[in-house]
Length: 571
Ligand SMILES: Nc1ncnc2c1ncn2[C@@H]1O[C@H](COP(=O)(O)OP(=O)(O)OP(=O)(O)O)[C@@H](O)[C@H]1O
Image 1 (tube, protein in one colour):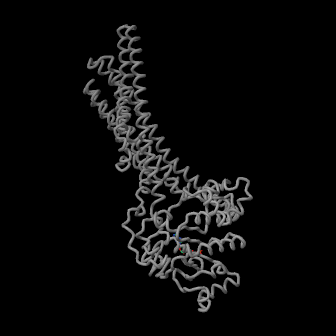
Image 2 (cartoon, rainbow, N blue to C red; image 1 turned 60 degrees about the vertical axis):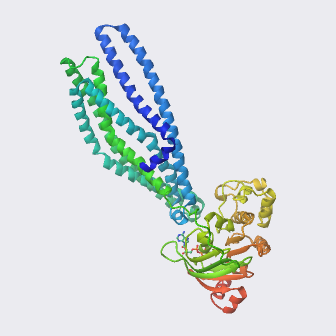
Image 3 (cartoon, protein in one colour; image 1 turned 90 degrees about the horizontal axis):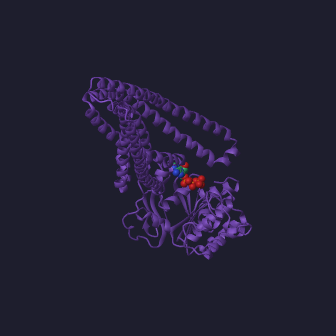
């Protein structure tokens, strides 16, 4: 609660003023009705109808004025609550984008969606309703107790005792309500996770004929979620019904006390409606405290889940200056590089170097750690040992800078919703049209774009689904070329490309070599024969290194891979 409230601090004055105005005005709204009823009763008892008429007009005007004040107060505090919610949402999203990758990849996108949407909205309710309800409760109880005792100490004591009994009954609901809401919230997360799996893999699921099974799983999720929500709702319904019985009972009870006190001349007849109203205003909040706390805990639980995102450790943008230049000859160099996503090592004591302007090919069986090596080169994960790029230790270079030094084309090339032009120029908003067309031409994009009716302004669709795998790959290559980074990282980029385009891209790489340092992960060994250096990986270890000819002479692992590929085994 304390952490969440720090988000409202920038607007604390207007927010708390608005909330206090709402609490006080709501109390006055109730009081006005009670006072009016008392005045009318008194006027009727004395036969003064003219007085009753003018009282009704006066109180109606006052009532409308107070309604207006409540609306203004609510408007102000809700505006501030929305601003605070926007800040939390942005902060949580910023963490998702800028936190250390190892914390992000572990999370399911569905879980992140629920936290960024439903949980943020629940946290928002803390500002919109919890704080206001608590302020209202405190003010109403204090003012009501004072008024009750002012009317008569007997009525004060009796109704206060009655209210405390109601409070005791309602407190019994807090723990089970909290538990049931927490379970329901957890199940919302599970349901959304399964839903995102279903939607993001829609095409693949149809190929596998698995959609019926997954739809069945989703249906079970929905049934469980419904049951869990119903369990919480049932408890709330019991609590609400009990509250309504209590509310009706307190009306009768306080009128009865009022009547007895009037009969014994302790109070006037005009004070009976005030007493009845005060009774309700004392007992009703006390009997709804249980529900209010359960609701508050439900909202706070959302807040806790959002703050878990907000607290994710970020990449150290303010790292110390990159360690001084140790090795200006080599573009890339690593010594005893060791890394694991968890305890299991994925890269084990790797050592190699690559001079500037040269091309390195990384080959090895599937899962041997090739892509992981590229990810470390982009500074995405922490590692042990030494890994330098252009002479600087990667772990000591600010993440933004290390990513400026490298341009990466991944195996899977999802694009962003937008046009082909926008997808190529992503990250280079300053690029001229000529530069974009030049990169597109070098990557082979121009050759297929000319067949599109809207050319470079063709929409690619969500994740680029309206393009073929090869077309997406070429657009990603164009984006990397446009970035004009000194080091280019290509992860199996020719996997979806036809042999003519592959030849074209090979020629582009040949032209870039010398000016750029290039690292290529390749399964098809025929594509890397011209690489200046080849490293061969096996189960996270570097087992061989050399040029194609040197490795062929060794008759080792590389030759074994070549033979397996000749027999038709790939990767
Ligand atoms: N985000 C991750 N979390 C945990 N383990 C991972 C993660 N990414 C990869 N791995 C594991 O690390 C190992 C190396 O994966 P990597 O993707 O680097 O292999 P690769 O040689 O590039 O494989 P391929 O040729 O199939 O692309 C594999 O065992 C893989 O299961």
